[in-house]
Amino acid sequence: MAEVRAGVDALDQRLVALLAIRQGYMDAAARIKTDRGKVYDADRIEDVVAKVKASARQQGLADVIAEPLWRVLMELCIAYELKAWDRLHA
Image 1 (cartoon, rainbow, N blue to C red):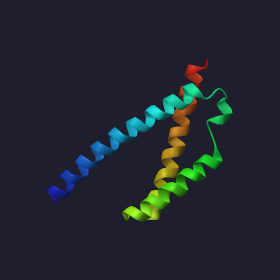
Image 2: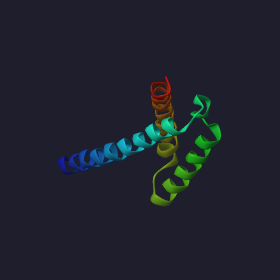
Image 3: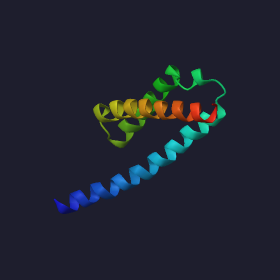
Image 4: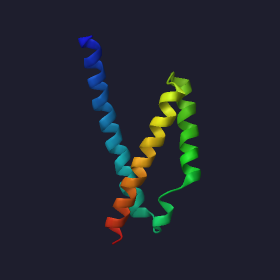
């Protein structure tokens, strides 16, 4: 069990690093978008979910994990981007 936990901990560190990179893209989007209303894009959300689900299936990740995880991730990223947009465009 210790090896399994060590593997999970190592993977979590990699995931955090990747999420930090994703957050950087949210900062870039907040700088680029001239209209706060464009931060939330329902069509883009569904496009991302569809791509994630396809990738998840190819890599053996269950939809019941992938889809809700990405929906929450995008919700949090949108909230983050809105705050970044407000800060940058105040």
